[in-house]
Length: 466
Image 1: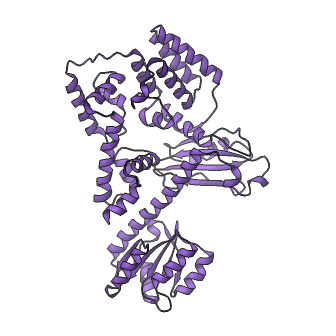
Image 2: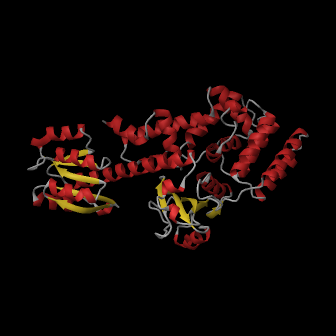
Image 3: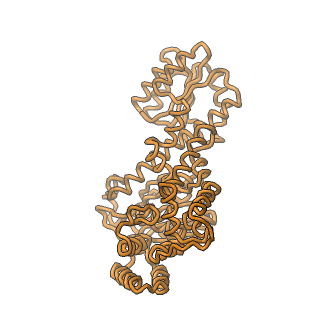
């Protein structure tokens, strides 16, 4: 819950603020109520909080001076003020100095509820933004255990494991660990949580024991348990791949990363290339299916795709749809291994014959129409090519020829335009907007939005509404 304190020099007003705002209903816990700023400051020196609601005009120290003092102690504390009409200029000054909002006295129950909902969304967005930033930092760099857990060196024999948990029905982290297991939890939005846990043994069996307590649609990806204590590589990537494996196998429950033999991967890839040279695509399909049965990881599927594409079309990087893959593209562009291999074989065979007796232009119009009808859903180019009875590579080239862009960029721009409209015209949370425009990965949505508009969705809403 978010920790808050209330400040007002009039006891009756303080009591009213406690009662009229539905604090507990929206995840707030009042940990202090004060009638003067000096007592509140003494409390805050030992007890940082997430939010402070304060009166503006008070004897001894007014609300704005109090905010500046608190910001020296805890720069991230969020402030809002209540003021009478006569103090409106104070409220404006408070906003200029960084206050989140202000309310005019007397506050009605309706205004109190609307404010509490907005505030909860605001704090939630701040928390997720911080956690996403920390998560992306872990993606880019090796994880040094001592930097995450200061006492790690004292725990002989402990190793670090990464756990990605996805459960859209949950808005709080469901896994729990005792204090004997140093851990850190990051909320990545849309029911997705990342755990970094230090333990003396593999956590897989412990998590399996907690699984019956979770909803049936829960998916948990776990990294392997073969790391050194000094420098932990690939933890985030392995957890991500395990989650993708569950998706690609259409499974719920737990999946743990197990490295696939690199020599076996090399043999599979070389055999596939020879089969393509002989135009034996039936054998290719069997080989690809067998590779999945043998336990390839998503990173291995990417190697197969990229190596075969390099052999068939060295210029493939120019085309987003069937360009070279990485983990993020694999997850976003394909629903499962069947779609992945079907698309790859379409490209390798390069059969551009459309079954439908229609013009190329009409096919393109049909593709655009399909996208506009389904862009808020979980949409893949393979869905469109299948619906129009044309192969994947032909759909890619046709769309790029007539639109001047790729399917992925067109779909992204359409979704982002809808997202900006919803940010400014509704009070939906950013997570709800993410879902409504067709994304089920808050981190990816946030990253794409910032790449296009150079600010986060939350910053866009605040800036443009002002």
